[in-house]
Image (cartoon, rainbow, N blue to C red; front, side, top):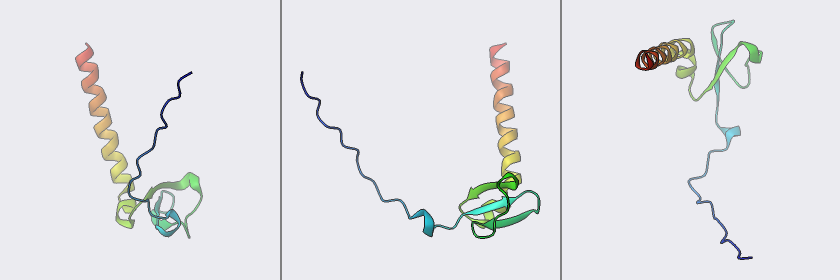
Length: 81
Protein backbone atom coordinates (compact mmCIF):
# COMPACT_ATOMS: atom_id res chain seq x y z
CA UNK A 1 0.00 0.00 0.00
CA UNK A 2 1.38 3.39 -0.99
CA UNK A 3 1.70 5.90 1.76
CA UNK A 4 0.09 9.33 1.26
CA UNK A 5 2.28 12.33 1.90
CA UNK A 6 1.53 14.08 5.16
CA UNK A 7 -0.57 17.19 4.90
CA UNK A 8 0.66 20.21 6.75
CA UNK A 9 -1.73 22.87 7.83
CA UNK A 10 -0.27 26.25 6.96
CA UNK A 11 0.32 28.38 9.97
CA UNK A 12 -1.06 31.87 10.03
CA UNK A 13 -0.80 34.72 12.45
CA UNK A 14 -1.34 33.57 15.98
CA UNK A 15 -4.68 34.35 17.54
CA UNK A 16 -4.72 36.64 20.55
CA UNK A 17 -5.06 34.96 23.88
CA UNK A 18 -8.81 34.98 24.44
CA UNK A 19 -8.32 35.45 28.18
CA UNK A 20 -6.62 38.77 27.46
CA UNK A 21 -9.26 39.97 24.99
CA UNK A 22 -12.20 41.74 26.61
CA UNK A 23 -15.64 40.63 25.46
CA UNK A 24 -18.80 42.65 25.76
CA UNK A 25 -22.39 41.53 26.13
CA UNK A 26 -25.75 43.27 25.86
CA UNK A 27 -28.17 42.37 28.63
CA UNK A 28 -31.68 42.51 27.16
CA UNK A 29 -33.30 42.56 30.62
CA UNK A 30 -31.37 45.55 31.95
CA UNK A 31 -30.43 47.26 28.67
CA UNK A 32 -26.84 47.50 29.87
CA UNK A 33 -23.55 46.60 28.21
CA UNK A 34 -21.63 44.16 30.38
CA UNK A 35 -18.25 42.45 30.38
CA UNK A 36 -17.26 38.90 31.21
CA UNK A 37 -16.61 40.11 34.74
CA UNK A 38 -20.09 41.49 35.41
CA UNK A 39 -22.41 39.80 32.93
CA UNK A 40 -25.80 38.52 34.00
CA UNK A 41 -27.50 35.23 33.20
CA UNK A 42 -26.82 33.80 29.76
CA UNK A 43 -30.50 33.70 28.82
CA UNK A 44 -30.59 37.51 29.00
CA UNK A 45 -27.42 38.15 26.99
CA UNK A 46 -26.64 38.89 23.38
CA UNK A 47 -23.03 38.54 22.30
CA UNK A 48 -20.17 38.40 22.74
CA UNK A 49 -19.13 41.51 20.87
CA UNK A 50 -15.57 42.79 20.41
CA UNK A 51 -16.38 46.33 21.58
CA UNK A 52 -18.76 47.99 24.00
CA UNK A 53 -20.07 50.14 21.13
CA UNK A 54 -21.06 47.06 19.11
CA UNK A 55 -22.69 45.50 22.17
CA UNK A 56 -24.71 48.68 22.73
CA UNK A 57 -26.07 48.32 19.17
CA UNK A 58 -27.05 44.65 19.68
CA UNK A 59 -30.80 45.15 19.26
CA UNK A 60 -30.37 47.49 16.29
CA UNK A 61 -27.95 45.08 14.61
CA UNK A 62 -30.31 42.16 15.19
CA UNK A 63 -33.25 44.09 13.72
CA UNK A 64 -31.20 45.11 10.67
CA UNK A 65 -30.04 41.52 10.13
CA UNK A 66 -33.62 40.24 10.45
CA UNK A 67 -34.92 42.78 7.90
CA UNK A 68 -32.11 41.88 5.48
CA UNK A 69 -32.76 38.13 5.81
CA UNK A 70 -36.52 38.62 5.45
CA UNK A 71 -35.94 40.59 2.24
CA UNK A 72 -33.60 37.92 0.86
CA UNK A 73 -36.19 35.25 1.63
CA UNK A 74 -38.94 37.30 -0.05
CA UNK A 75 -36.81 37.69 -3.19
CA UNK A 76 -36.03 33.95 -3.29
CA UNK A 77 -39.75 33.14 -3.03
CA UNK A 78 -40.58 35.57 -5.86
CA UNK A 79 -37.90 34.01 -8.08
CA UNK A 80 -39.25 30.50 -7.49
CA UNK A 81 -42.83 31.44 -8.44
